Figure 1 (tube, helix red, strand yellow):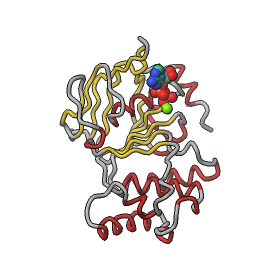
Figure 2: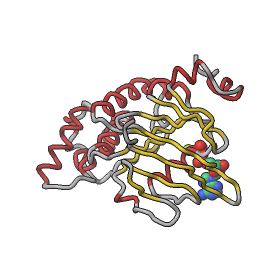
Figure 3: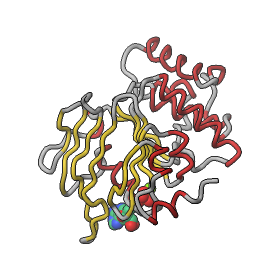
Length: 241
Ligand code: ADP
Ligand code: MG
């Protein structure tokens, strides 16, 4: 078995005595999309925040490519984790051009940064906007720029927290498919958080089903869909049509 790109072991986070994340273990294989799927309030974002390093677990360990990056005494700061982030309110910097937004986190000469930004904008079909400003773009276009920005520094891991929930239903399926294609092309290793079973079925190589702070089932999407672990999982998936 390959060394996982990301491995979290027995993560626990308590708020006011309550175990909001309760002994969560999870892996992402290189180049895979793992979906952390579960209802609102089950602890998905808290899990993601600990992996990003903006929150600290009470117990457990996080490893990247087999190397410890965080336990309860040792902690590599967020900016040195080579982790890309994308959230629902993916705010672009309004005062920077689209190209400068994408180039923002990059190292190297100005020409090199512009080249990489151009490459990604080309890939999302927006290279003609490179010198425009975010407010001139539609919501869907801004979303694509945000994805290009997150991928530009070639992060080891991409964390995406309900990134499509701010979009119209009409746009969402198309952007999900485009996003997945680009993630695959870039070879990104992704942890995608969602409360929508349909999204997980569409995008995941592997689903980790979460409830009340715990992972209740893990597996390939069709396995989970066909063999839900318990009645609550059946009910959760029954929304898909
Ligand atoms: P999800 O992303 O699955 O909707 P969250 O991880 O945001 O869930 O939250 C899980 C639970 O932890 C919720 O009950 C939430 O209210 C609680 N919680 C999250 N952050 C804090 C905090 N900073 N202080 C206290 N409770 C919190
Ligand atoms: Mg959340």
